Amino acid sequence: MTAIVWKGVETASSESCRIEEGPRGVLVESRIHGGAAACSYTLRATEDWEFTGIVVRAGGRELHVRRTDREWEVAGEARSDLRDAREVDISASPFSNTLPIRRLRLDVGESADIITAYIRIPELDVTPDPQRYTRISENEYLYESRDSDFRRSLTVDGDGLVVEYPGLFTRAEDEPPLAPQ
Image (cartoon, rainbow, N blue to C red; front, side):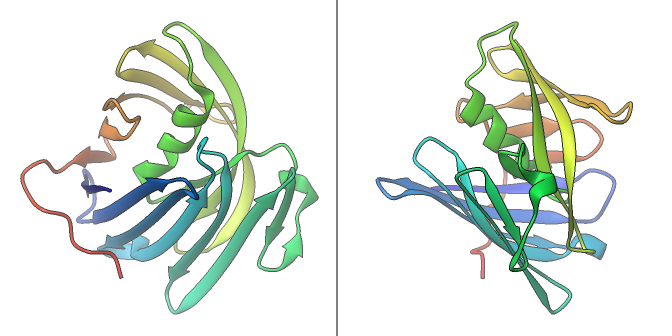
């Protein structure tokens, strides 16, 4: 089991995240405290880090998103507009970057264009979001939005978990994570 706390750089937020990997796949339980982004989520992926489902809870509401065999279902409804997406991107969490980083396994210098199912918090709406990841060095990736000018160079650890997301998140090394609810 891996436990991490991320702090919001511009917001007074923190995320306590617990990741368990095993023969049945990956289970992530996380809780985000502070501001409009307050929420919790439970995410599941295969052993190869292929996203399969998430439940997001925010503002007394719950959103269920799942993917099977390139079919997406959001809140119980089929979503053909997400057919090219392979994972989710949760607006309030740096954990989202780990999914494509782990799945793509890029070599240094390689790039990949992907589509994610972008989940906005606290709205809990889901839209397709084109992105590009380029591996700059062993522990650095360039993240680029392909439909805006947003880009950041992310520093990650050996497990592909964000250490530094300039302007947005930083890992809190000196305090124990809170247990997710």
